[in-house]
Image 1 (spheres, one colour):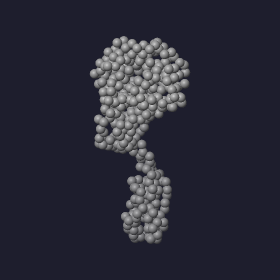
Image 2: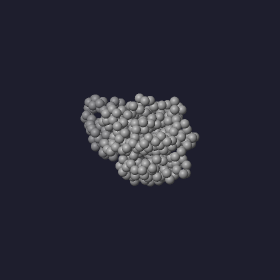
Image 3: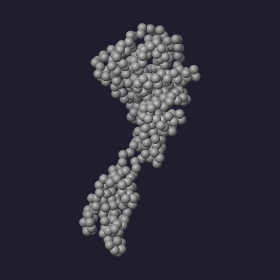
Length: 433
């Protein structure tokens, strides 16, 4: 049996539409096909983080949760390999919880119970069934709940402390919009990320080893999103590593080169950048360009003013010019034809502008509904054409609101990563074993 992740909760500070969601998938992908024995509840203190502690039992319980969720075989070697990263994650969680308490933010018992309930409902478990699955996995409900509390607390910290400081000017949004509509198509990648920090030089080898472990888990079939929620040290971990659409040319050169020929689902990295390592997954790619005017569909009416001789053509042109200036839409062309005693207008529906003859295409491309062309000559006299219906082609150019949301997301992520890094630096961490 494998528990599938439920739909995440949404948290929407201010106008941010796609803000941080509760990370449930990483907490609920647990295999209960075979029970493993619970490890002894060793309460030996392994680390002191300011005023809080991390015990050996905390580490072993979290390892069990992670190993079962990843489908990793439970061996002493695997546990030994996971201990450093689990300890680091638990230290970060203590720091995040402490900052939430300092700001007066907390996760209520009702919020935690709601998560548990949704996990059970999403996996067709009876009330209390999740606890049984956790026990079979060799971990505890308390371990599960503590991770929920830490993740939701940090979301609240980010929402309360950082989001109000992010201001996106209209000029910034307009600049992005101009790039989208200014001519050359813009290529973008929809990316997921896993970020692991390197705070000191002696962590370099450890972090590289952690990425090797993550890559091995992905090769074994573990979903990138699950690993991002479990291990990534960026704020995007709460949304399965999702960082939204990123414009080509704005990432590290090594990543750009990997993404250029990548298929959806391919990985790029890990790449060393200032502060740590990034690993990306390509979830989708798109090319943004304004809709081509020739793809618009129109209904067109053409009114011909018959004329045979040059004098008649001159008179017909004068009449056509007057009609063009005074007529009120396509429906009015029938009245004009009756009063002028000329043939009724010819109508053609659902024409693609690009399929028109070049001269007519030039005349109507920029016309709006109810607008008429300049008078032009035909083999029967002179004529005007009018656009009766115009349907613009679909556009994939993001709205201003979407652009603002993406800019906010990127800046909140950067600010959250810097915020946690600063909290780590001032924290008093005493690792005892």
